[in-house]
Image 1: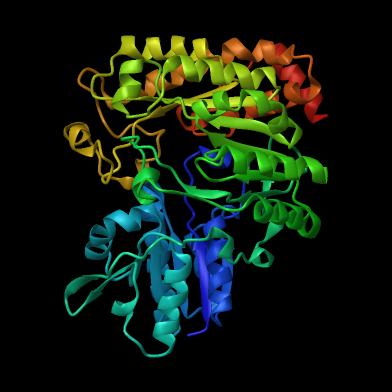
Image 2: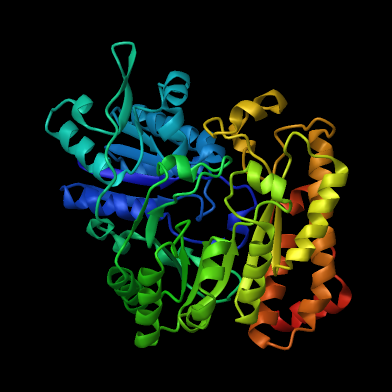
Length: 487
């Protein structure tokens, strides 16, 4: 047991990957801990390389790994299991054995379904944080020990299902070991900034909120842990210096949770004169809280913030247990705009009571919030979400590959899935067509270029092209402005 191949499954939904390509940060950390334990990990991002199962099979034949691990969220789970099945088939062709494992949110909560339905492809499900569990499991397997002694696992044995005790969260995130040198950096870029090289970084893990549709608060058990500002800043400087990274995606849900810690990080980046761009998300109440230091956000390199508004009525916000109010969301977006930080948010459609009229109200309220970019997402009934029992009667497909927030998998009391999809497309058309001329006339050169490129990606490089062949048609003046940028 020596070589372990970490593969990102080849799943595409036309959502996140329409904006750029970035490394699988979980694999960077897991690889670091595997290497520290004496193994030879390799990272293979089949998704970003745009490889299919035949490409993956060829890589497996070439590498002949002792183990193949992958990770998935619910929508990418079928692709992840297909990948592991191919790993088993290739190993059998070559007369050898391979150990396979699946981690991530879906495997954490749905391990029984995964193992009972695909036990021939998946040897182990990793539950919760994977760094310590992965290294410990393969050490035990190498030394002839019993995997049932390893916390955070699920697997079959003697016809039954074994689920070991839960592994406690890593107490100090500064102890995590990254393996940045194993990343194929030429794959990664942020399309909105041509020529950029992009990395993901993690400043914290978890969220203490209780949003009923969210998988993250369940995965992290409503806890929050933060890395030290010094460790984060040093990692950014290292990636800038060693790999030429100039765009960073902060991947955690709530990096701003502790104001003193967060402001210290901003100060460190400003003092060092970092010229990289940072993209992030956070809660609207933290933005309002930080009104007096928002100038530091922009000076530290933060150019784009996603804020989780999700709903446009207080009733729906309360139903989602967002612990927020409409006016705070509106104020947060306004404050960010005043500091020249681009804003992005999303609005969830498709609750059982959704009607054509309520969709129109959401569109109008989205305009009231006035973000630079808006996404209109369809509620996905995660089978482990708190609100799943009330959504289950409306679910019309169990194909997890469609549970990606852009494909309709539920009907409502008065709308079919096709009607919901048509309503989402209308929202996108109306919202962006009203903003394109404004962006073309924007005086700030950086913001104008950023927004027009973003609009082009949304309209011609996202899931919208599947439903409107060729994408949305831009006004001639906007098309000319984008062409000038490209030239």
